[in-house]
Image 1: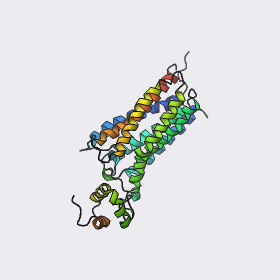
Image 2: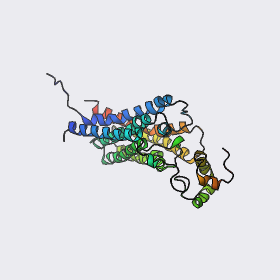
Image 3: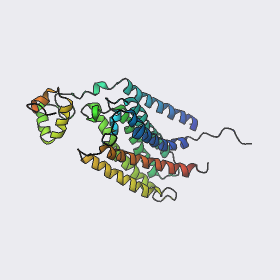
Image 4: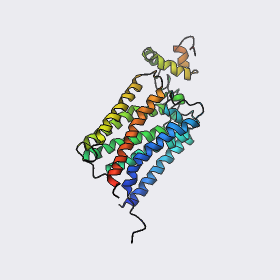
Length: 86
Length: 215
């Protein structure tokens, strides 16, 4: 294959990739994977109330940060009894 | 009589992508998009926040900042692989630079969550695609390339440059990764990510000079 043909293929490949990136961001195509309340716990940090209690025992800072940003998460209110001082 | 049209040389453009990519990234991500984002603080905020879901410059930063650098890096790696003057080991390093490019492309596709506090699946993929995986994979690429050009008369000049810049960026990446409440995190991250891409640009420039200076 000649350099010119390869060059055209590389260019098309590059434009397709940039097009994909544009479409995903402009139309928020990955929104279904952007839910921070995924599962029954604290997003991707921990999956359930029990699991979160154990996780937060050694990762209090990360749990507090999550709950500050997701104040309507019921597990936050259960674990941090009395609410958070925000 | 000279021919009006010169032969098209693909390698020339592929290697140049390794210079143009990082320079474009530095201009857009380190300067242009920062000033387009009202209230953005480059000293204390992550660069990923420019492409976060709550960023006003999300599309611009993701496409023309992160993904474009990924595409340019992939193109450069293809040019590196095609460089016959290099040893097999140095050409093999192209695989790791290609993977780095794929990861940087993914950084642009998988935006981080609001304020880059990543708790969603998309945010988690963003975290892994950025420095978590990119730094070690790129480091392997630089090490293999350095070992591959150790005895090369014209390319071995790059070895001390790789050792200094690569080593410094690894130390910075380690400091950033192990300090949760690091102050001036924006500066650390810009250096930790900027230095390896600056190094990539230097390597591309030297290869370009050596291969095409006589053309």
